[in-house]
Image (cartoon, rainbow, N blue to C red):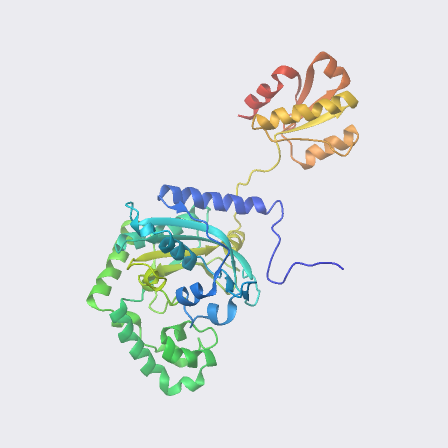
Length: 423
Protein backbone atom coordinates (compact mmCIF):
# COMPACT_ATOMS: atom_id res chain seq x y z
CA UNK A 1 0.00 0.00 0.00
CA UNK A 2 1.31 3.45 -0.96
CA UNK A 3 0.74 5.95 1.83
CA UNK A 4 -0.08 9.57 1.01
CA UNK A 5 -0.10 12.72 3.07
CA UNK A 6 -3.54 13.66 4.51
CA UNK A 7 -5.51 16.23 2.52
CA UNK A 8 -4.89 19.80 3.64
CA UNK A 9 -1.39 19.13 5.00
CA UNK A 10 2.07 19.52 3.49
CA UNK A 11 5.61 18.24 3.81
CA UNK A 12 8.15 21.03 4.21
CA UNK A 13 11.26 19.61 2.59
CA UNK A 14 14.92 20.64 2.80
CA UNK A 15 15.34 23.75 0.68
CA UNK A 16 11.96 25.05 1.84
CA UNK A 17 12.45 24.41 5.56
CA UNK A 18 15.32 26.92 5.59
CA UNK A 19 12.88 29.66 4.50
CA UNK A 20 10.63 28.82 7.44
CA UNK A 21 13.58 28.92 9.81
CA UNK A 22 14.66 32.30 8.44
CA UNK A 23 11.17 33.80 8.85
CA UNK A 24 10.71 32.39 12.34
CA UNK A 25 14.13 33.65 13.45
CA UNK A 26 13.42 37.11 12.00
CA UNK A 27 10.12 37.25 13.91
CA UNK A 28 11.80 36.04 17.11
CA UNK A 29 14.49 38.71 16.81
CA UNK A 30 11.89 41.45 16.34
CA UNK A 31 9.91 40.18 19.33
CA UNK A 32 13.06 40.24 21.44
CA UNK A 33 13.56 43.91 20.60
CA UNK A 34 9.97 44.63 21.66
CA UNK A 35 10.51 42.61 24.88
CA UNK A 36 8.10 39.77 24.01
CA UNK A 37 9.00 36.34 25.43
CA UNK A 38 8.24 32.96 23.87
CA UNK A 39 5.53 30.71 25.30
CA UNK A 40 4.88 27.12 24.19
CA UNK A 41 1.48 25.56 24.88
CA UNK A 42 0.12 22.05 24.13
CA UNK A 43 -1.08 21.23 20.64
CA UNK A 44 -4.32 19.90 22.15
CA UNK A 45 -6.51 21.29 24.92
CA UNK A 46 -9.81 20.47 26.59
CA UNK A 47 -12.58 21.30 24.11
CA UNK A 48 -14.36 23.54 26.62
CA UNK A 49 -11.45 26.00 26.43
CA UNK A 50 -12.22 26.81 22.80
CA UNK A 51 -15.99 26.80 23.36
CA UNK A 52 -15.49 29.47 26.04
CA UNK A 53 -12.51 31.27 24.54
CA UNK A 54 -13.21 31.30 20.80
CA UNK A 55 -17.00 31.44 21.01
CA UNK A 56 -19.68 28.90 20.13
CA UNK A 57 -21.11 31.10 17.35
CA UNK A 58 -17.90 31.08 15.31
CA UNK A 59 -17.32 28.90 12.25
CA UNK A 60 -14.21 27.55 13.96
CA UNK A 61 -16.19 26.03 16.82
CA UNK A 62 -19.26 25.09 14.82
CA UNK A 63 -17.59 23.54 11.77
CA UNK A 64 -13.81 23.44 11.80
CA UNK A 65 -12.42 21.96 15.03
CA UNK A 66 -10.66 18.61 15.19
CA UNK A 67 -12.33 17.19 18.30
CA UNK A 68 -12.08 13.67 19.69
CA UNK A 69 -12.62 11.75 22.91
CA UNK A 70 -9.53 10.41 24.65
CA UNK A 71 -9.34 7.09 26.49
CA UNK A 72 -10.50 8.76 29.68
CA UNK A 73 -13.70 9.95 28.00
CA UNK A 74 -12.56 13.58 27.94
CA UNK A 75 -13.35 15.78 24.94
CA UNK A 76 -10.06 16.99 23.45
CA UNK A 77 -9.49 19.43 20.56
CA UNK A 78 -6.43 20.12 18.47
CA UNK A 79 -5.87 23.85 18.89
CA UNK A 80 -7.50 25.84 16.05
CA UNK A 81 -5.84 29.11 17.15
CA UNK A 82 -3.30 30.27 19.71
CA UNK A 83 -4.85 32.99 21.86
CA UNK A 84 -7.16 30.82 23.97
CA UNK A 85 -4.28 28.51 24.92
CA UNK A 86 -2.00 31.43 25.81
CA UNK A 87 -4.70 33.02 27.98
CA UNK A 88 -5.41 29.66 29.65
CA UNK A 89 -1.71 29.41 30.52
CA UNK A 90 -1.67 33.03 31.69
CA UNK A 91 -4.50 32.26 34.13
CA UNK A 92 -3.35 28.80 35.20
CA UNK A 93 0.21 29.96 35.91
CA UNK A 94 -0.98 33.17 37.62
CA UNK A 95 1.08 35.39 35.34
CA UNK A 96 -1.22 38.25 36.33
CA UNK A 97 0.71 38.30 39.61
CA UNK A 98 4.05 38.93 37.92
CA UNK A 99 5.36 42.41 38.86
CA UNK A 100 6.53 42.96 35.27
CA UNK A 101 3.30 44.04 33.58
CA UNK A 102 2.04 43.86 30.93
CA UNK A 103 2.91 40.25 30.18
CA UNK A 104 4.21 40.23 26.59
CA UNK A 105 4.31 36.83 24.89
CA UNK A 106 4.77 35.30 21.45
CA UNK A 107 4.25 31.78 20.11
CA UNK A 108 4.85 29.80 16.94
CA UNK A 109 3.41 26.42 16.08
CA UNK A 110 0.88 24.32 14.17
CA UNK A 111 -2.87 24.96 14.35
CA UNK A 112 -5.63 22.72 12.99
CA UNK A 113 -8.90 23.56 11.27
CA UNK A 114 -11.08 21.28 9.18
CA UNK A 115 -11.85 23.56 6.25
CA UNK A 116 -11.74 23.28 2.48
CA UNK A 117 -8.08 23.31 1.42
CA UNK A 118 -7.14 25.96 -1.14
CA UNK A 119 -4.17 28.10 -2.09
CA UNK A 120 -2.56 29.37 1.10
CA UNK A 121 -5.08 27.60 3.35
CA UNK A 122 -4.33 24.26 4.97
CA UNK A 123 -5.94 22.04 7.59
CA UNK A 124 -2.66 22.04 9.48
CA UNK A 125 -1.01 25.44 9.29
CA UNK A 126 1.59 27.36 11.27
CA UNK A 127 0.81 30.58 13.11
CA UNK A 128 3.16 33.11 14.62
CA UNK A 129 1.30 35.12 17.21
CA UNK A 130 1.77 37.82 19.82
CA UNK A 131 -0.25 38.53 22.96
CA UNK A 132 0.11 41.48 25.38
CA UNK A 133 -1.89 41.02 28.59
CA UNK A 134 -2.42 43.51 31.38
CA UNK A 135 -2.64 46.97 29.79
CA UNK A 136 -5.53 49.19 28.75
CA UNK A 137 -3.20 51.73 27.17
CA UNK A 138 -4.02 52.40 23.49
CA UNK A 139 -0.26 52.80 22.98
CA UNK A 140 0.18 49.06 23.33
CA UNK A 141 -2.45 48.50 20.63
CA UNK A 142 -0.29 50.62 18.35
CA UNK A 143 2.83 48.73 19.47
CA UNK A 144 1.32 45.35 18.63
CA UNK A 145 0.18 46.55 15.21
CA UNK A 146 3.58 48.14 14.52
CA UNK A 147 5.32 44.89 15.51
CA UNK A 148 3.20 42.92 13.03
CA UNK A 149 3.94 45.40 10.26
CA UNK A 150 7.66 45.34 11.06
CA UNK A 151 7.83 41.56 10.57
CA UNK A 152 6.44 41.86 7.04
CA UNK A 153 8.51 44.91 6.16
CA UNK A 154 11.73 43.39 7.54
CA UNK A 155 11.25 40.51 5.11
CA UNK A 156 10.99 42.95 2.21
CA UNK A 157 7.25 43.08 1.58
CA UNK A 158 6.04 46.43 0.24
CA UNK A 159 2.55 45.84 -1.16
CA UNK A 160 0.82 45.83 2.19
CA UNK A 161 -2.43 47.35 3.38
CA UNK A 162 -3.28 47.80 7.06
CA UNK A 163 -6.94 48.33 7.94
CA UNK A 164 -8.21 49.05 11.44
CA UNK A 165 -11.58 49.40 13.09
CA UNK A 166 -13.06 49.74 16.55
CA UNK A 167 -15.60 47.24 17.84
CA UNK A 168 -16.20 49.47 20.88
CA UNK A 169 -16.72 48.61 24.51
CA UNK A 170 -19.62 46.57 25.88
CA UNK A 171 -22.04 49.52 25.91
CA UNK A 172 -21.21 50.44 22.31
CA UNK A 173 -21.53 46.84 21.14
CA UNK A 174 -24.94 46.42 22.77
CA UNK A 175 -26.25 49.51 20.97
CA UNK A 176 -24.76 48.35 17.66
CA UNK A 177 -26.09 44.83 18.18
CA UNK A 178 -29.64 46.14 18.57
CA UNK A 179 -29.26 48.22 15.39
CA UNK A 180 -27.98 45.19 13.44
CA UNK A 181 -30.87 42.99 14.59
CA UNK A 182 -33.39 45.62 13.52
CA UNK A 183 -31.60 46.04 10.18
CA UNK A 184 -31.51 42.38 9.22
CA UNK A 185 -34.49 40.72 10.95
CA UNK A 186 -37.13 41.67 8.37
CA UNK A 187 -35.24 39.90 5.57
CA UNK A 188 -33.10 37.43 7.46
CA UNK A 189 -34.85 34.58 5.62
CA UNK A 190 -32.94 35.70 2.51
CA UNK A 191 -29.65 34.87 4.21
CA UNK A 192 -27.89 31.54 4.78
CA UNK A 193 -28.76 29.28 7.72
CA UNK A 194 -25.63 30.36 9.58
CA UNK A 195 -26.63 34.02 9.40
CA UNK A 196 -30.16 33.23 10.51
CA UNK A 197 -28.68 31.57 13.61
CA UNK A 198 -26.27 34.47 14.16
CA UNK A 199 -29.04 37.08 14.16
CA UNK A 200 -29.90 36.44 17.79
CA UNK A 201 -26.63 34.96 19.04
CA UNK A 202 -24.06 37.29 17.47
CA UNK A 203 -25.40 39.55 14.68
CA UNK A 204 -22.01 41.20 14.25
CA UNK A 205 -20.80 37.99 12.61
CA UNK A 206 -23.36 38.35 9.82
CA UNK A 207 -21.10 41.09 8.46
CA UNK A 208 -18.30 38.51 8.19
CA UNK A 209 -20.36 36.04 6.13
CA UNK A 210 -18.69 34.96 2.89
CA UNK A 211 -21.86 33.53 1.32
CA UNK A 212 -24.03 36.63 1.71
CA UNK A 213 -21.41 39.37 1.43
CA UNK A 214 -22.99 40.71 -1.79
CA UNK A 215 -26.50 40.99 -0.35
CA UNK A 216 -27.77 44.58 -0.59
CA UNK A 217 -28.41 44.78 3.17
CA UNK A 218 -24.70 44.26 3.81
CA UNK A 219 -23.83 47.56 2.12
CA UNK A 220 -26.33 49.51 4.22
CA UNK A 221 -25.78 47.74 7.56
CA UNK A 222 -25.24 50.06 10.54
CA UNK A 223 -21.57 50.83 11.17
CA UNK A 224 -20.10 50.24 14.61
CA UNK A 225 -18.29 53.58 14.25
CA UNK A 226 -21.65 55.36 14.47
CA UNK A 227 -22.44 53.63 17.77
CA UNK A 228 -19.17 54.20 19.63
CA UNK A 229 -19.69 56.01 22.93
CA UNK A 230 -17.36 58.85 23.91
CA UNK A 231 -14.94 56.57 25.75
CA UNK A 232 -14.65 54.10 22.86
CA UNK A 233 -14.28 56.89 20.31
CA UNK A 234 -11.54 58.52 22.37
CA UNK A 235 -9.73 55.19 22.68
CA UNK A 236 -9.87 54.62 18.92
CA UNK A 237 -8.66 58.17 18.25
CA UNK A 238 -5.65 57.56 20.51
CA UNK A 239 -4.76 54.32 18.70
CA UNK A 240 -4.83 56.18 15.38
CA UNK A 241 -2.77 59.01 16.83
CA UNK A 242 -0.06 56.62 18.04
CA UNK A 243 0.06 54.76 14.73
CA UNK A 244 0.50 58.07 12.93
CA UNK A 245 3.32 59.06 15.30
CA UNK A 246 5.00 55.70 14.63
CA UNK A 247 4.80 56.24 10.88
CA UNK A 248 2.49 53.24 10.36
CA UNK A 249 0.15 53.85 7.42
CA UNK A 250 -3.41 52.59 7.85
CA UNK A 251 -6.99 52.88 6.66
CA UNK A 252 -10.11 52.85 8.82
CA UNK A 253 -12.55 50.20 7.60
CA UNK A 254 -15.89 50.35 9.47
CA UNK A 255 -16.83 46.97 7.94
CA UNK A 256 -13.88 45.10 9.41
CA UNK A 257 -15.13 42.33 11.70
CA UNK A 258 -12.84 39.72 13.22
CA UNK A 259 -14.11 36.14 13.10
CA UNK A 260 -13.73 35.34 16.80
CA UNK A 261 -16.18 36.26 19.54
CA UNK A 262 -13.68 37.63 22.05
CA UNK A 263 -12.70 40.87 20.26
CA UNK A 264 -13.62 44.40 21.39
CA UNK A 265 -12.21 47.89 20.79
CA UNK A 266 -9.29 47.73 18.32
CA UNK A 267 -9.48 45.24 15.44
CA UNK A 268 -7.05 45.12 12.53
CA UNK A 269 -5.96 43.15 9.48
CA UNK A 270 -2.90 43.31 7.26
CA UNK A 271 -3.48 42.40 3.63
CA UNK A 272 -1.36 41.87 0.54
CA UNK A 273 -2.02 44.03 -2.52
CA UNK A 274 0.46 42.06 -4.63
CA UNK A 275 -0.78 41.26 -8.13
CA UNK A 276 -1.80 37.63 -8.48
CA UNK A 277 -1.70 36.95 -4.74
CA UNK A 278 -5.14 35.36 -4.81
CA UNK A 279 -8.70 35.91 -3.63
CA UNK A 280 -7.86 35.60 0.06
CA UNK A 281 -5.69 38.66 0.68
CA UNK A 282 -5.52 38.69 4.49
CA UNK A 283 -2.06 37.93 5.87
CA UNK A 284 -2.60 38.72 9.54
CA UNK A 285 -5.42 39.60 11.89
CA UNK A 286 -5.76 40.66 15.47
CA UNK A 287 -7.31 42.94 18.01
CA UNK A 288 -8.18 43.64 21.63
CA UNK A 289 -9.99 41.12 23.83
CA UNK A 290 -10.67 42.67 27.23
CA UNK A 291 -13.13 40.04 28.45
CA UNK A 292 -11.33 36.84 27.47
CA UNK A 293 -9.24 36.34 30.62
CA UNK A 294 -12.35 36.51 32.83
CA UNK A 295 -14.19 34.14 30.47
CA UNK A 296 -11.43 31.57 31.01
CA UNK A 297 -11.53 31.96 34.79
CA UNK A 298 -8.98 34.66 35.52
CA UNK A 299 -9.23 38.15 36.98
CA UNK A 300 -10.31 41.13 34.90
CA UNK A 301 -7.35 41.62 32.58
CA UNK A 302 -7.19 43.45 29.23
CA UNK A 303 -5.33 41.95 26.30
CA UNK A 304 -4.45 42.49 22.66
CA UNK A 305 -2.70 40.33 20.08
CA UNK A 306 -2.45 39.08 16.53
CA UNK A 307 -1.70 35.91 14.60
CA UNK A 308 -0.14 35.55 11.17
CA UNK A 309 0.06 32.54 8.89
CA UNK A 310 3.58 31.66 7.79
CA UNK A 311 2.17 29.83 4.75
CA UNK A 312 0.43 33.01 3.58
CA UNK A 313 3.53 35.09 4.36
CA UNK A 314 5.57 32.81 2.07
CA UNK A 315 2.91 33.17 -0.63
CA UNK A 316 3.11 36.98 -0.34
CA UNK A 317 6.90 36.87 -0.68
CA UNK A 318 6.52 34.75 -3.81
CA UNK A 319 3.89 37.12 -5.24
CA UNK A 320 6.29 40.06 -4.81
CA UNK A 321 9.20 38.08 -6.22
CA UNK A 322 11.22 38.30 -3.00
CA UNK A 323 13.98 35.75 -2.45
CA UNK A 324 15.02 35.29 1.16
CA UNK A 325 18.77 35.45 1.86
CA UNK A 326 18.83 31.87 3.09
CA UNK A 327 22.31 30.42 3.50
CA UNK A 328 23.02 27.84 0.80
CA UNK A 329 25.70 25.19 0.61
CA UNK A 330 28.39 24.00 2.98
CA UNK A 331 31.79 25.39 3.89
CA UNK A 332 33.99 22.42 3.05
CA UNK A 333 33.79 19.00 1.39
CA UNK A 334 36.58 16.56 2.23
CA UNK A 335 37.62 14.27 -0.63
CA UNK A 336 39.55 11.18 0.49
CA UNK A 337 41.80 8.99 -1.71
CA UNK A 338 42.87 5.68 -0.27
CA UNK A 339 41.81 3.58 2.68
CA UNK A 340 43.90 5.31 5.35
CA UNK A 341 42.89 8.76 4.11
CA UNK A 342 39.25 7.68 4.09
CA UNK A 343 39.51 6.63 7.73
CA UNK A 344 41.24 9.89 8.65
CA UNK A 345 38.62 11.97 6.82
CA UNK A 346 36.11 11.00 9.52
CA UNK A 347 38.29 12.75 12.12
CA UNK A 348 39.03 15.74 9.86
CA UNK A 349 35.35 16.41 9.20
CA UNK A 350 34.54 16.04 12.91
CA UNK A 351 37.16 18.65 13.85
CA UNK A 352 35.77 21.08 11.27
CA UNK A 353 32.22 20.66 12.57
CA UNK A 354 33.28 21.16 16.18
CA UNK A 355 35.00 24.38 15.08
CA UNK A 356 31.69 25.67 13.71
CA UNK A 357 32.44 24.85 10.06
CA UNK A 358 29.77 23.14 7.95
CA UNK A 359 31.55 20.11 6.52
CA UNK A 360 30.72 16.92 4.66
CA UNK A 361 32.48 13.84 3.25
CA UNK A 362 31.68 10.87 1.06
CA UNK A 363 29.80 7.95 2.59
CA UNK A 364 29.04 6.11 -0.69
CA UNK A 365 32.58 4.91 -1.50
CA UNK A 366 32.55 7.03 -4.66
CA UNK A 367 35.45 7.71 -7.01
CA UNK A 368 37.29 11.04 -6.86
CA UNK A 369 35.39 12.54 -9.79
CA UNK A 370 32.05 11.59 -8.21
CA UNK A 371 33.14 13.13 -4.90
CA UNK A 372 33.92 16.43 -6.63
CA UNK A 373 30.47 16.34 -8.28
CA UNK A 374 28.93 15.80 -4.85
CA UNK A 375 30.85 18.84 -3.56
CA UNK A 376 29.46 20.90 -6.44
CA UNK A 377 25.89 19.79 -5.74
CA UNK A 378 26.34 20.77 -2.09
CA UNK A 379 27.74 24.16 -3.20
CA UNK A 380 30.87 23.67 -1.12
CA UNK A 381 33.00 26.82 -0.79
CA UNK A 382 36.15 24.75 -0.35
CA UNK A 383 37.17 21.20 -1.22
CA UNK A 384 39.91 19.59 0.85
CA UNK A 385 41.70 16.66 -0.82
CA UNK A 386 43.68 14.13 1.17
CA UNK A 387 45.27 10.88 0.02
CA UNK A 388 47.49 8.35 1.72
CA UNK A 389 50.55 10.23 0.45
CA UNK A 390 49.34 13.57 1.93
CA UNK A 391 48.54 11.77 5.15
CA UNK A 392 52.12 10.55 5.40
CA UNK A 393 53.33 14.15 4.97
CA UNK A 394 50.68 15.46 7.42
CA UNK A 395 49.28 17.90 4.82
CA UNK A 396 46.01 18.46 2.98
CA UNK A 397 45.28 20.23 -0.32
CA UNK A 398 42.62 22.94 -0.10
CA UNK A 399 40.86 24.23 -3.21
CA UNK A 400 38.87 27.48 -3.28
CA UNK A 401 35.91 26.59 -5.50
CA UNK A 402 35.20 30.24 -6.38
CA UNK A 403 38.70 31.07 -7.66
CA UNK A 404 40.09 27.61 -8.43
CA UNK A 405 43.17 28.39 -6.33
CA UNK A 406 44.65 25.37 -4.56
CA UNK A 407 47.17 25.39 -1.70
CA UNK A 408 48.82 22.79 0.50
CA UNK A 409 48.15 23.24 4.22
CA UNK A 410 49.46 21.45 7.28
CA UNK A 411 46.84 19.13 8.77
CA UNK A 412 47.59 20.57 12.21
CA UNK A 413 46.66 24.10 11.09
CA UNK A 414 43.96 23.17 8.52
CA UNK A 415 40.97 23.92 10.75
CA UNK A 416 42.27 27.34 11.76
CA UNK A 417 43.27 28.12 8.15
CA UNK A 418 39.77 27.37 6.92
CA UNK A 419 38.13 29.29 9.76
CA UNK A 420 40.14 32.42 8.82
CA UNK A 421 39.22 32.00 5.16
CA UNK A 422 35.53 31.77 5.97
CA UNK A 423 35.40 34.98 8.02
